[in-house]
Length: 354
Image 1 (cartoon, rainbow, N blue to C red):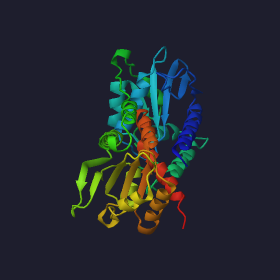
Image 2: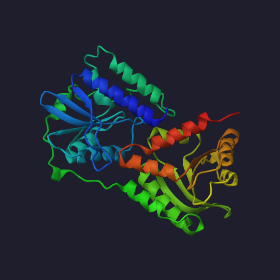
Image 3: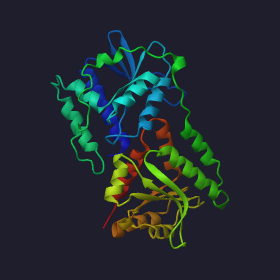
Image 4: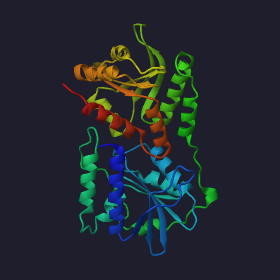
């Protein structure tokens, strides 16, 4: 199931849980802020009014920068008479990061631990079990642990205690530039084909460093193979706690990941897949390549990539410019670009034939 469907299911479940916790909850129909963003829910209880943003992540833990981006978005939304902002996430967030976000952005973070502890004292409707079952079904890769493993049992069980701190003034709220939108504009300005190949490579490198700074390390560009016959556009070491990247390590023998960037005017031909396949060595922990072709790939190239996985266990994931743009917008919006890649691999694997 793709990320959008899971996100909607999680939001619907949170809606029911908040109602069960005696909040009056409504979908936010206020105008979107800067034509881009508006919070998901409005919570009311007696004199309390709060905006809430709901974020579903496939991974049990996601990089702190993703949570910070989501919190920064809701912190900027015009206040009017609404004093509080809440970020509700499906993942587990550290206590120190929650405090940092509350102190610097004035945003309350409720994570998997909070929701479980809110429900634990008296859950006659079985929402704790419903949430656990949903999280089990949504888990990706090698994560088969109980969904509540790793939660903080010490979090407060009364939601009201989180509204006791003073809100920040508008002057104190930090503004975050939409870096992803800026990168999209710059990417589209690069000439297609041979005249823009070097700029396209450089911009793809910059984009990947914005999308995955904590997931990848040792960024080696223009790497030459030991026989001096091959040049790789980019090779990185996976250094992530995200379940998607851990799956690449354990299921596809990919401690190192290769990136290739093709600024071709036409869709990528299948011959390029055969060339790329020669660079991959699962036994040497380099079993995956993400190949970014500006204008996509031919059906023959896609079939060749499926053949490489089926016959040699080598994963060649094909992305185009539109995929980059979608991930950049997700990153700006506090969503996980790793979850987008996870959906792409799910689609790829489920389409394999004999």
